[in-house]
Length: 314
Image (tube, rainbow, N blue to C red; front, side, top):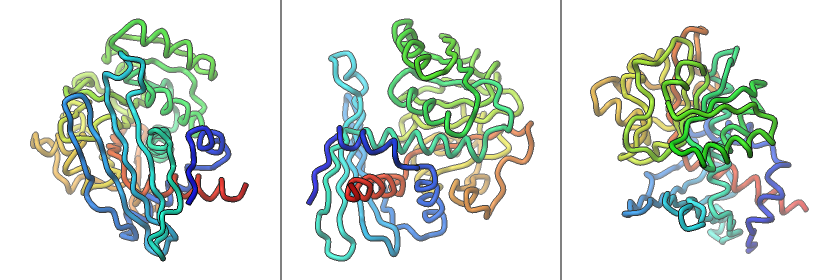
């Protein structure tokens, strides 16, 4: 049994092409080739803990992932995310590896999924990228978008000047041109690819300001309580995409929009089916599209497998 440390994991991840690996995971999931039980969840006063697990049929492994988000941690000098992944043999049940990633792999696979959503759903001409949030995921989403878009003009929303200043300074070192704002209206009025990355329990983007032709990837709302988008945005959208329809019926923006009576489940398409070409994606540059990414265990299976096998080859 191998214990893989965060340093080892961070060193190997840049050498792995994760987009096709995680696309294959989404495709297998939507084709019914994955066994993914409902999410295990602990909702605590100061944070939440998710337990996601499953396997792909005919694969070598099964994976159990524990990841947490304690959003006040930065105030006491700790990261908000933590966790680990356990990789087992499907043949014998042996524990093959403990990946002590401290939430890094969860953050990475979430950011890769955001890039995949943009690859398949964003308008052809991305004028400006809007990022809602200034935390770890806000940084990683933008970094991974660079692999699917040439746009480097970015507007970032945050609630504090200090957080915005740090974000601007760090991301400009990665080649982005960053402007900051305290208004999400500015994001909606000037950006046509938007990613929301917060733990908000109240909508941050209002439907009244949504323009034709934008794509929104919502990644922050991964519990039944969280919501970043006004549900009317999904009602106005010409295409609504879920990473997992069954999961999005219980959590995320789709859950909230159905609960509010704004959309029906029949309007939702699964991302894996778009990747596989079984259903169409964006149909015009004027269409409004929304991707609701709540995080699916197949992403964890694929990234844990890729890291374990890459390190085994060294």
